[in-house]
Length: 184
Image (tube, rainbow, N blue to C red; front, top):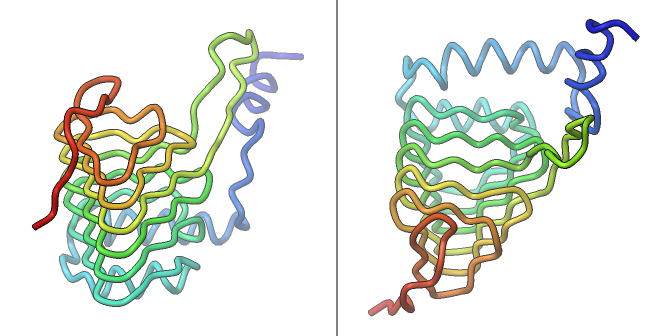
């Protein structure tokens, strides 16, 4: 097998985009023009585009400029959720955001990774669930397969590699529980 074929196999192994080439190209153009460029700062327009491409989105969702979403058809967003500037949703698998979720500026939701223990560096993907009322702080990272439970908080720059308990505040890399979240 030549290097070009090996690279092609490596790039597509274990990845189901869930869309045709035309749909992928259409999303790439729309994403470049309207989402990642910041030319359209109006949430209503961005939400409309995402819905047309298969996202399931609730009421009163706010999406700020410069957001990067891999595949809208693998995205579910509840009511009153906010996605801040520069967020990256690398949803090779499904990402589900509950009601009243806050994704702060520059946070990353990563559903895919590679198995570094294998010479083939196989891709694996796992869904992410962010439950109702959770807050993902600026520049925080949620890794593949993680569930952030109801009303949990990841502080600025925290890396969630395991499931996050409800009503808990996590900090660090890897994220550890530092206190309970008490809502008054």
